[in-house]
Length: 219
Image 1 (cartoon, helix red, strand yellow):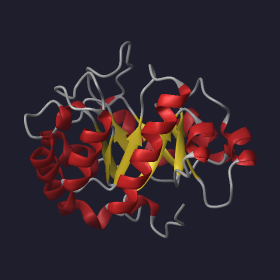
Image 2 (cartoon, rainbow, N blue to C red):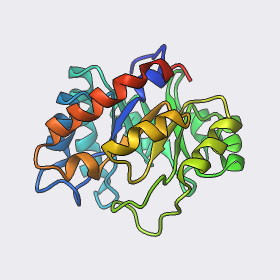
Image 3 (cartoon, rainbow, N blue to C red):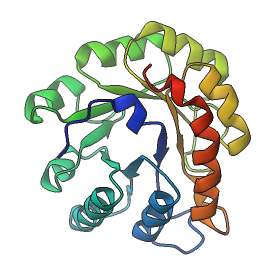
Image 4 (cartoon, rainbow, N blue to C red):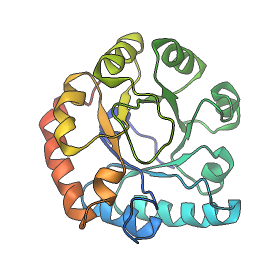
């Protein structure tokens, strides 16, 4: 588990492999393609997997993250994240409370939280979250019943906290400029990459676009 001196920079290009968007590629194959294309953070999210399957995925993601010097985050499951020596966990509003996770997690462990309102953002920061996933920015195919907060919602959340905010939800290449200029330190992407015929090449396009906003990663 690495100690990161600039978390915001590592969160700039945050990618979440997804079986429904992956055009037949496994989660591990998707992760490798994204990392080869320049992803700086990779998240393991697979709600239908058993604990054993998730742990095996996590070990493979850990190896890939080490190979490409990327950050590795596990969604929801603190136990799996700790067992696989992940860099952190991302907790939603229905998951283990951040304060509890912080007591269990070792020093330097990263905890991300989901927020779509300033109130939730402040609560997460005060509880010990290191970064926020803010959204959904736009309609997305990877989650049902998503609440859209848009650019104005991102601005309000960003203004309420001092920790990095990653924009998530329906973000495509053409949206990068708008969300970065609204205050995001990075973008979290799934179907916009893994729905492409060549995820690695699509990731390269995202990396190139995000590099224009590298000055923002100290947010």
